[in-house]
Amino acid sequence: MPVRDIEVVVTTAPPSVVDAVVAEEDTYLVLSAEPEVREPGVARLRAFHEAYNTEPVEPGSVVAREGSPLRLLAVVHDLSQDTTWREEWVAAALDAVFRETDAWNVRSLALPPLGRVHGALPRERLVALLRAALRTRTPRHLERLFLVVPDDETAIFQKLLGSGLWR
Image (tube, rainbow, N blue to C red):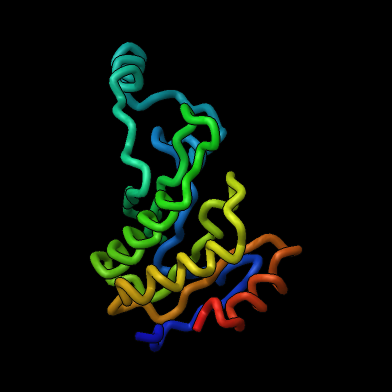
């Protein structure tokens, strides 16, 4: 079934207002963490204890963080492995992203090229995985998907999305 009613826009920067943004993430949720060091809101000993006892998130999953916009952390890396990303994790994370867009009634979504922000997933495979995820789980509420890519990749992704890989 073709993807209907979802406009896919290749851009270097999404509009200032979107319902949700996706970030490429690792199992301990450190890749998208803000680099600013802040005083913890809890006692230091408790903060160290919580950090020490943190369990990793399953690769291929998505962690939703409430806010405006909603943040969807797509776990596609395990930094303890050589080749930190896997194509099957990207595919599973894309499916989970679209499941979350339905759960949160997301109408507009900014999505980086998962597997390429901190990995080397080929562009063609990403487009094929994105197409498959949208066909498998067509989000009910999603109207616009902004694929946020680097300046030098805009034309390449536009061509891929216009090619047979998308249809």
